[in-house]
Length: 364
Image 1 (spheres, rainbow, N blue to C red):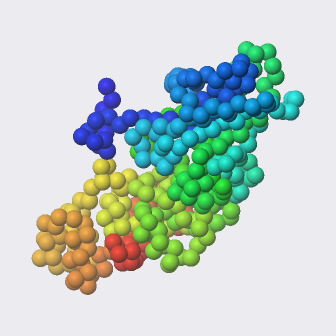
Image 2 (image 1 turned 90 degrees about the vertical axis):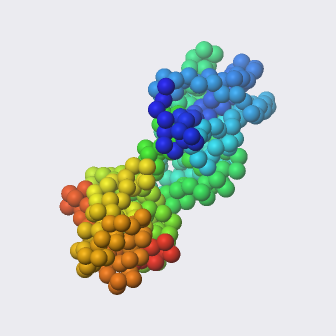
Image 3 (image 1 turned 45 degrees about the vertical axis):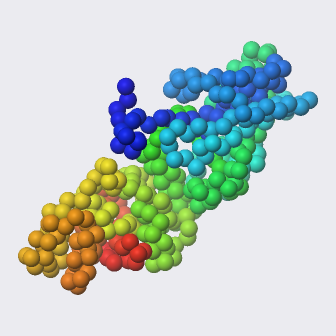
């Protein structure tokens, strides 16, 4: 039995789902069966990179004299994925002799317009592993039918352009729709790996564009505050969320000249303590440490004792602000040192502490 997940309702295990890449592969296999054998495979079973063999029910079938098209509704399990419930299509036609499998972006699938991604500029945003999965399906079916594996695959997603506005795609330079993603074919609910992979692609694009300063923000308010302060190109801003360690570890190997970490007070207190995952389920504010930082900011014994008995980090910040003490600056300095330790001196670091109203209240 799976361990209970802290994010799951009533502690039950979270249900996994399937990536857009897995759905596109299954749709391709079903459409190809209709083209080569005269009937759609439904349900259609595929083999994932890890050996799993899920079956998918078709939600759409369409055939013509020279094409077949199948569609599958993506089930992301319990993950709050913006593509959950999206209809993923694969339209399969005969390709030019000797062309092999070619990939095309249909409606709702984006096109790469900036360097730094694992696909070239001008390519449809269908990632390498889904391409490999679809290519393997085509080659296997072609071998059974005794025909060359020369087929053109056009992948589409219903309402994909609208859904893409809620993703990183516009910043990464993927325009016109979603990316067809997946390395395992499986969506792991609230996956740290998926978020960190998005952060890494953001760094790759920034570096490929020659940017020398990137910004990791814990949320929307801190990002807007950093934008107002720094005025960098949009590609410099990375939705780091709670994964400051994931960003810093990647930058340590793929450095730029400077990184700014922007976040809420409580989040950055955790970074000041040395935490590299800032989610409340995986790290907590140590009020004793925070009280020590308040003492370092000039707090007297009575105020420091109040901080030790406080309910939240933001209550301590309020005490410091009322006393005119630069606690947020002290936290920023300690958070900056934690980040520098992780980066091992490979680049410059600055920190912006943002309050709940979106104002910068401390920096280093």
